[in-house]
Image (cartoon, rainbow, N blue to C red; front, side, top):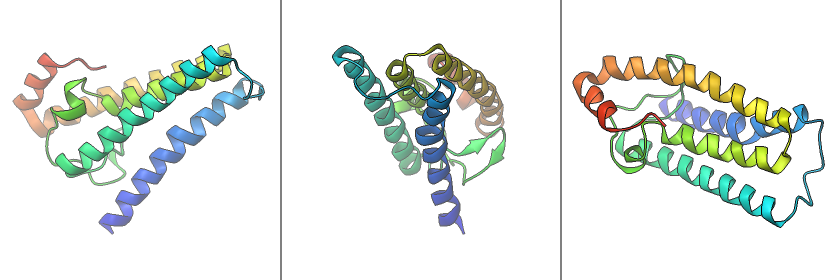
Length: 159
């Protein structure tokens, strides 16, 4: 059962953040053509999307190996098994939310690719929703890890 929850968590994350949100951006933008965007925009898009996905994947792998858990925890509800250890090294030295930073960077690449205000608005709305999630998660981490988490917050930025 635990393995199924983990697989579900990873699949849900991939579907929501890598497939559904870019599709929503594209639909909100009026379904513009997504080819022939020019070399500069294509380069910026590629760097943002590949860099963002790389950071998110690194974080997921690190979380699984070091934290002994899964990233899928939504607004205080455990979708998949939570991490068992506070992670402060690896990608968590960069900031306290490297997976979200990677996702936001990937989606910023989608905004550059589509180049519409509607795509940017979807990005801003997603960021606002995720900020609420981050605050909720920070309260849980404070309860779970106490002073260790407070010290980590003092020395590491949220984003």
